Image 1 (tube, rainbow, N blue to C red):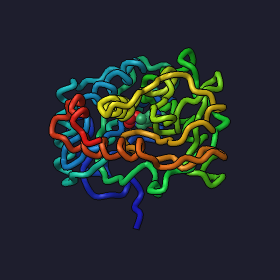
Image 2: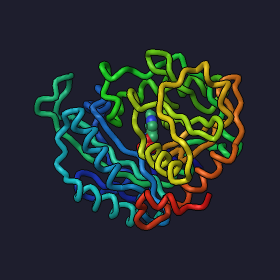
Image 3: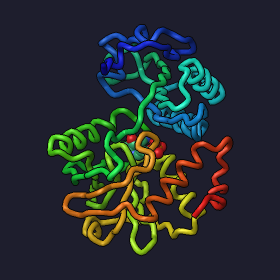
Image 4: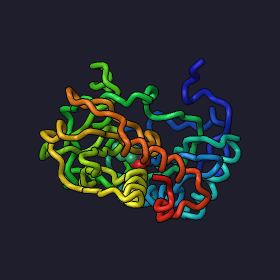
Length: 300
Ligand code: PMP
């Protein structure tokens, strides 16, 4: 049976303590809920170790800062909390969700005197995409990513996910797995919860992260690709080019490296580049201390 997320066994790390999963509640009058005063992370543990944990914690603190939220926990506190809640979950393959949000001390847009909360939950999440072995099918969303003048695109902020939710929901309603989102200039940005890469003539092409998250998985894949001797081109990519690519995949902590089967009418194969990067990523996430220059040593 699929239990709701509020009705599970286990513990949640909550403002420095461990509380029963079902007791980690907030009041309905809550600034995070009403005004999207909330930032979060999505991370994965492999064989009991959180991949690039410190980079996720740094990004969380950065996101909180972008929303002017004072976090009363240090980087070290966050690292220990994540390790401990992971250990207490008993899971070795797990998804980790830290969230920082403003609570019920204040209602309205002003955040003066607002209380800031920090929670970390851990659960098993196979992948962002349920059926991905043959590649996922994307449609092109009419919703676009906001430019940096309109939103802090470098923050993993809940507010930005309103647009992603609209795009994803419209895509699913049409029978697609996800949506490709463009930026305001009409260039390709990313999927709703993952960055995107294309392959042409053995080269990897990916949009510059100028109005969306420069994903930790994206950065890992770029390093791995360079280590495998691939040319990586970060540039503006117009949808007119979609017909010229032979392979396509999306990346993210939840999506890992997921092949894309099609975008609108354009079809892609799960070719050598995608396969070797999926394998390389599968190897690097289980390394004890993934010094990414190690990528050079990975099998071709
Ligand atoms: N873009 C969006 C909108 C996302 O939600 C994610 C997942 N966090 C990513 C990109 C990829 O980021 P990362 O590789 O750091 O998980």
